[in-house]
Length: 338
Image (tube, rainbow, N blue to C red; front, top):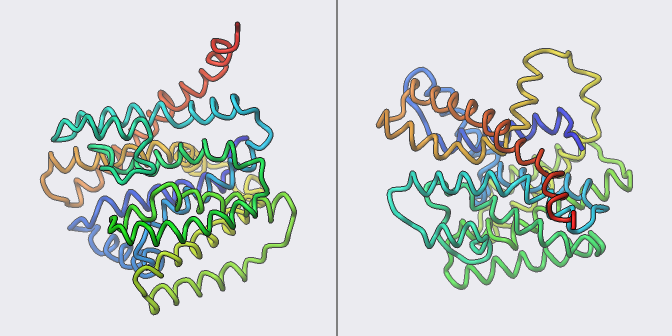
């Protein structure tokens, strides 16, 4: 399935939000704009003091789209399609991250490329820590292969119980708060919120009113800003995931191709949306490399970092992502020709 322009725009905005957050606050002409952006994000989205909202949206969107397209695929075809789409770029960027790291963290590299760090509180990928959520995402794909045969809502309920237990267990063990929301149990729960949204609103064609989404969003902003309780605040991310799933359903239903002008700008935005996985994967490495050269953030280094990230992501999408996606047929013939 070719993703709609609306979905690609959402993916791009989410990827850029993660990029802007990690790139920090530059000085100079961009200072006021970026400072205001970070203040807005802190109050509106990151007030749950948990996982970055961009990651939550990515995971929810993944659950929505994959549940929409993969239910009827055979097990081998499904795994092959997911592997080719995600793992090659992940592996290449993991190697680049290892080589650019100040330490020879081969044991950490092994735990991550074998996907074991999805469930074990181990150090994140050397030189490219953002990849930890990609690791968990790939394990989620394998879990879905077995869970897709069960009722989606029943699975979601069981995952909610597992999510609560996950918070309690890791808090009791004193595991870092970041890991509590980026491990397999949490992200699989968010992922299935997206899958359930497709099941309820698209497959079963139930009504989704925009005003209800807005009211839920206002409720989230109020409760997450004025009622902070340590531990309980992880539950606020559930509300954010639900809001994200509703938003994805609304965008999915819109036929944006009928209402936009076929401009170069829209084509570029759509292409960058297709390249959002590469943006997500490469931006930390590029940020560190540029900062080593400029030493400090300023307007020049900030703009150069963003431009290099977007150019690198575009080339990565064309020459790595699409290259391996085009090899799917060849790999199927190689594996099953006998």
